[in-house]
Image 1 (tube, rainbow, N blue to C red):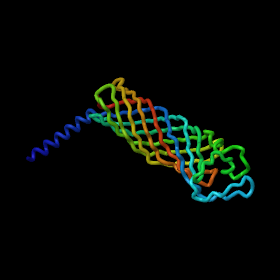
Image 2: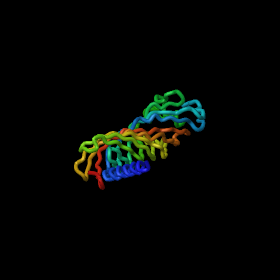
Image 3: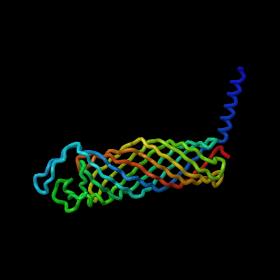
Image 4: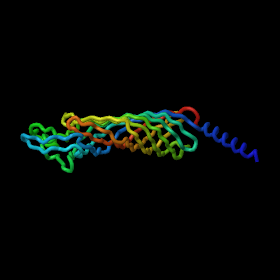
Length: 259
């Protein structure tokens, strides 16, 4: 009976060595388009805004009054570098570094409390002289950006791992440094940055050109959490969201082991 555990241990070691023989390390790089989801920014006034005493007359805004609006982004870009390890049986793991950036298309639906103030003169926010333009007109300009970079640990499963064409799925977790800069109509509304927990889901397909080169196309859905912004135009804080769909094309160079 003592021989059985030794036999099982030897079998496990042989399987591990066999897997190691098939294992393969690779490096890769990809570029693609980033399509950020709309950010439904939500926050509140951190201190009271007093009522005006001369025209235009506006009521006071108490501290803790909710503030919100929606930001739409332009299509941006994403650059990614990877180093990974492929195991026998279709599984692989990967470390990824990425950088992406997208401009801002427009802001809309500025709401104080429960009131949409898009049609009100912009002086309601600045508490200065009549601006001659509504809040909606002022924030419609798409100046500003969303920018981020980070690292992920990813895991994938390659279907048809022995073939030239290999569809795959994957998931990853990591950390993302996210920055927002809101400047509609060249007005410094506010900036913010934070390092957030992030996660992503991936699907794609690899085509093996030969033993030393692979090309692939991949879709990522990435959620990089919320970033708190301290506004400069108003005594208020705002939480902006970073969610993206990314479509990319890439190149991998395998080395060591494999077929």
